Image (cartoon, rainbow, N blue to C red; front, side):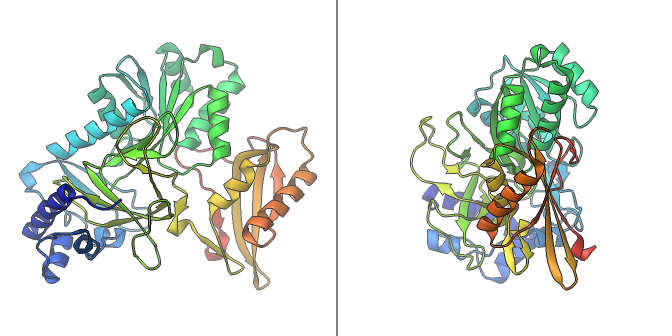
Length: 412
């Protein structure tokens, strides 16, 4: 996807606002003598922005609109350093709600639906984004927020929720609890809108089957509004994203050059109309691809492929680059293996060791045979044999937020 002339004009307005505000990126542009662009080639010569830049701008160095126009701030979690503070104007908040409402509509959700919202509220962009989109659509929001599974299930039954919004980890936890309590016949869910973490095909099938619902992947990140900038349609041929609000390019994370449509690389996002904290060529470190051609649903909005992981998800073990998505791919092809796994990496006697814990789908499986089978399949995928330990279903920790899949003990 090459940037269009109308998008170039929108980028030029963003450049002007950034330069005038003397924000971190505005100074970068001014130092490079850039006041605007006139072609796709010009656009590709613009400097990237990175999360480190955004942290350096803490607390309000990203603010590009006058303070009297800022109505809200959101923030990244800040678990690995200073948080990123993102200011929003009234228009930004409204635009985000509009995009989110489009996501619900793309998933076939209407104002007749009752939407149970389990992601967190507060500085994080999740819960409030799901709610604003729901209200913009005109549906009934049930804003429970995270945790308190007992109350979640009670409200789900009593209020007859038809849509669940959650992380994949929490959706699985709820599915398991519903199964355990034998209350599936009292649940009215039809659809699930799942975001915040990457999830494999095996996990998707389990949640969909156990809850008997259609699942939709929603995409977004705090730095770029929040969740709601893209979602898959019922044909599940990729996530449509709103190219009147954002421009997406896919780059090779090593050469930093754009790759052709259909080829995997790193997602880089430019906001086209954002006022509070516009970003140009922001490196997300998420790995995906642009899907060429038209979608069977007829939507003209372009599509992103499944998020395959992050460039910083990569683990270097025994000199080999390993991604969690590779493990998920193997497990999805093994019927006796559950979607739940955990990787522990340690360094013993001068060498790396990878231990892979996997839940079996039932207690009737031969654990030793299954472990050996998984070890052989993983070796075929990554080039070395992990130590595989099979555990009973439900033994690995469940999370109300995001599951911690990889524990690297080499640096603890």
